[in-house]
Length: 116
Image 1 (cartoon, one colour):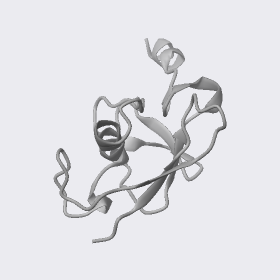
Image 2 (image 1 turned 135 degrees about the vertical axis):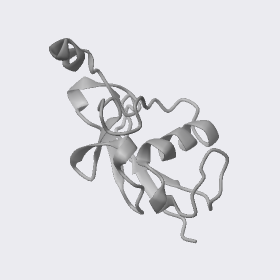
Image 3 (image 1 turned 120 degrees about the vertical axis):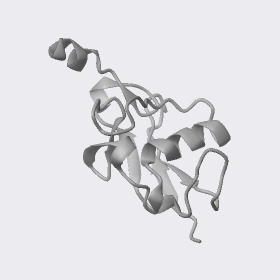
């Protein structure tokens, strides 16, 4: 099995540098898949938080692409992390820099207020 590498640019990093993270061979605790391409980006971020970087901030709620709380920018496009599969070389960053709070989390309070 291949070991994909994903690249993260996180809010709060002073230099704005990209971090390369090589994902380990599967299976891993909490990841029940034969290959990383069967795993969502949100599940991979949760694994990174548990096993590699406890300070990583990422949001997850519905896990079906309905709420958009897990929205991130991947390779230049804003997508939901829970419905996007992991692929080698992908670049993950906050969905909007001016709304970035920490890690890949952005302030969604304006969106929530607009829906009420």
